[in-house]
Image 1 (cartoon, one colour):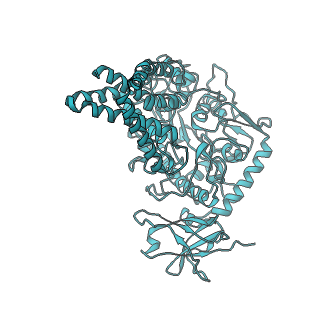
Image 2 (image 1 turned 60 degrees about the vertical axis):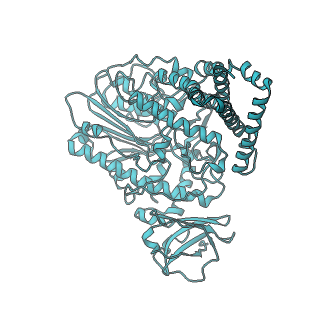
Image 3 (image 1 turned 120 degrees about the vertical axis):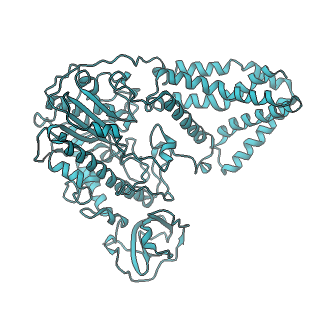
Length: 634
């Protein structure tokens, strides 16, 4: 067979086995490119390289092979590509992952033999030669990605409004306000002292609701003052009228945000990083996405999750990333200057994955069963409660990050004279069998309410404002406090001009569906959710007490009576700290105590005969723990 025909066949097979599945998936999820700040040429180059370079490399390997062995090498490449195509088609057919891999491999071998023996099989691939270019054209011209490839990113539409004071806007991610509250409904000053200190010197809008379920729509709503619309990307070309363009013509902008890109390149040069860095990230994350799409679920244990964001999957799996790190240049810029300035930072905290203790030390444990398709939690509430526990521990780290940022503002003299706004994009829900973040009838109270603190210039006394507010009110509020007129329509209103009329809570799903709920009704649901949280985790106690969850929390550090349960413990990995102690217990057990040396070192809920408990490694003393049942108080 001539080499050019062999190359054409490899291109066709590669297109069907790898390029087209990725074009189809990523073409429906343009946020994959938008969240990393990909330009139109990034997307075009990515698509061309993905389609053409790998088959060219395979052809080169074949060309360098001695002629007598070339046919065998070509057959191996053909069989391998067919096997990849088949595995994707059957990955959800049932059975163990390795069995499905074996079936795909067998069919790949059969296809290679058929290809070698029958001219008709080779003719089919020749006839399909236009398919790769068709796949490329559809991706670039008729998908979500096409809106980026044709977007105009060079024009900076700036209003140039001059602010009366510097502005610091901080957005946390995936933070429900209930997580900060204590049994009195206040900010828990023991567990989260820096959030509490902020509340003590600012106005806390205690009934603030987001308007969107996810970062890609919730953060643009914060920065534009507008309700999200379906099919918008979190990029400047879809949100030209925003806080950055309002102030950017007359103010210095200092922006840190890896998830959304609303600041135009002419106002925030270099925000998207280098071309090489963007393309390297695209290549790395595309590989992770493909493996997740290719392999059966039971073979993906060592592959980074793609459920925690839109980019940097390998970074999230790395032991060296730190979502609370403040870039040195941004930190140095936090000081008064001769011109008005806006500082904006979006922290991916306490957003999942939850891997940080309040001290900022990273840990690793064997995960309890988490969420599956459409972000639906596992049906075992005990497993979900442990993720909730880890969320609160990581929130302790977020509190420390806030403390360091405010301390820097205070040291430079900027804090007193600046307008400081601290908020979050949306909440998260911890209900077994329910969605963790996508909006549903069962989780609205958990997703809707977020913190909002507004410290006006020279404000020192705190107050609590209980009138309803929305995150789309933030830009109008900033403009009001700075004496700036917004020269375009916004859906929000300034919360500084008195209590608004009673407003329904409006929550919008990424696809555009709206949930409209009376404020009083949703607030009542939120208070019930807070009571549920307090029963599990308490309040007004150091975060170290979070190793005790649920009934019997007060038993930690005490002895316990009775006989230990006959349990089947999972393997315990003591290389990390804390340590995951988990296992099977009798079905009727509702809570367990982990006992070492006669003392309770941790308490955890149990459900459906399973429990998961975090234990400080030092408390284990290298001994095998005993597990006792705890009866809930009547």
